[in-house]
Length: 504
Image (cartoon, rainbow, N blue to C red; front, side, top):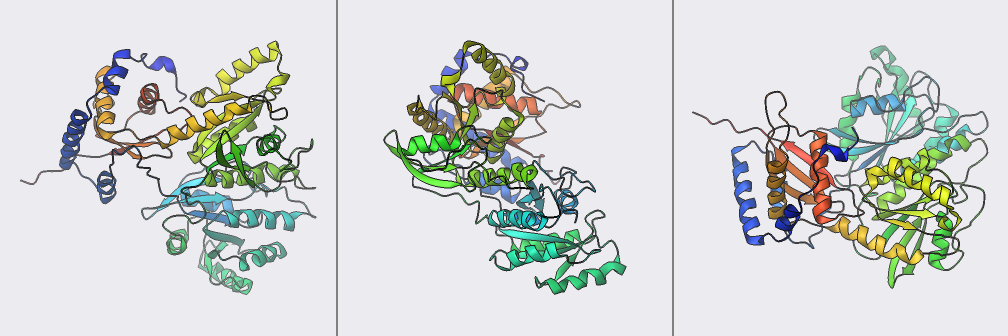
């Protein structure tokens, strides 16, 4: 359900004043008392570990660990998406008999035996007789670059094809762990077909049936032995210039922006969309500070691959976001806000990075377009109304100096830490102001809250029941109204805990 501001009352100015001027010692005592009350509830080791790391030091930057990344590669129609659905336990990846239907979303969060990891489901090329080997290989190459380990899926009923062998040559050259998956082994009679795949030279084939689930548990047990606890490819970098990803659909002016900030023709600028093939890192001095900019215009559209280019661009964008701290999403104001623009914004939100919206080609705007643009922003970008907006012309350099304050504001919000005492005082005020609705005869209570991490600000609520999404949005909205958080997403997570049974 989309957030509706009418769902909640306007903020009381007195609440803002009370929270901001609250005595820190008093707030700390209240938090300690609530924390002690949690001893009456069943807490697991993860809960206790979280509570032990509580810090009220505003400079204590705490990262959520970067989840290890598992890439699933293979030629079309071998069952990659069916395997993804089986692993994540829900039907999200598109499954059809037509090869190459995986297009848009490629990242999924998954969990096995209390270990969390990210799955990259590859697909999305447009198969044809001439280009299939090259396209599968190019896609596998990108996925391998972005992964800690790789599942290479082969159709055991067909056996190894020339396309499979094309990918194998790539996989042999990587230092990443590779697990060979023999899919469509629905019963023991087909086991010999899987054994034939030893010939690929990638070690033991793991026979599974993605459709029926046969062998998938054993495969995941094997995956956990090769995946690191924390991703090596998605690991947060610390220190040095702040890292900025420049995102946007083809031809909105990403490369022009990088060239203008760098003061040189660092990136090829061409009227043909998609001329930038790889992310280009560039250290730039802007506003008296050094920044590391990454231009991610996707990859060059090749013959026979135009349909799959969006998929590659999405993978590249995901890779750049993993390495960035803040994203500038560039929108071309001379054209209506598109579905592709919104998908890029959603990628930033999923990544948890800080966000600045740059409206490019502002010098081309007339009054009529300005009016329709404001309506589009209100309708399509209302969910990121908290992101700083900058109106620029990358080509002429107009208002480029406004980028730095916007970036600094977003990063400051991304780094922000709220003292535990003040957060719990705010929660108490919010519950008194707007109690959670009764559900099934019970009213969930918030026992204790803490900020588990910054970058992005991530809050955890210990509760006696599930909080409605609308109520979590209410808490998020109040956090923004009191503490700002301009330019940063906010995560509010729950841990529902029951009271410990007393032994008689």
